[in-house]
Image 1: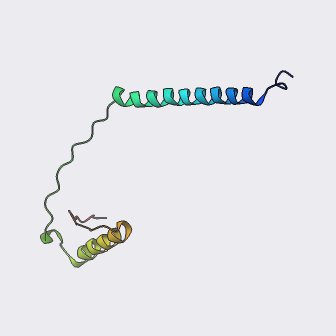
Image 2: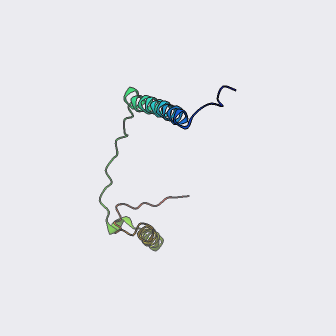
Image 3: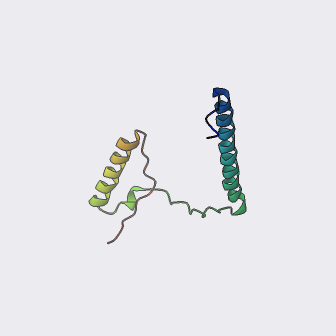
Length: 92
């Protein structure tokens, strides 16, 4: 076999060159993926601003309970302050 007489330094050189080739391929793939962003830019949909939240938006007790439970769950999950922006009833 022709690979039986490889020294340790020859192995290091081959490994180093192989690693460089892999990283060059990764850089080429990453730049190709990044260039796709400029070829097909995605426009974000325009968001309509929510009307200000008021207590008149809550029509019954079940809606109030749902808003409070959702706020409590969000507070426990994120450990941050909660501000209810809007609420609406979803009819089934």
